[in-house]
Image (cartoon, rainbow, N blue to C red; front, side, top):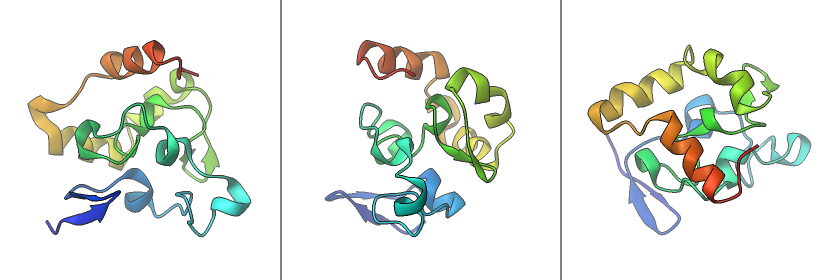
Length: 115
């Protein structure tokens, strides 16, 4: 896979907004009308699974854009996220290195960033 420069560092993994092409990243085609997605702006989980901000941990954030609409809280959307092709690709890409959802939620909670 080709390495892509992001934020002054090279990453070889796609973030959710690149995978879904939602356009809600900063400067994206839909950011002005729909707002910047929390996954593209929440920095607490930056680097987890090789993503920028929360770009590879979107399932633990409220307000992400899923299936054509803004999703609810992480607790409300988690089951449907497990059926998402992006989530499944992260599980496959990371294998044993996949950071459990409970650990991600704990990090957000400790940082005061949980929905």
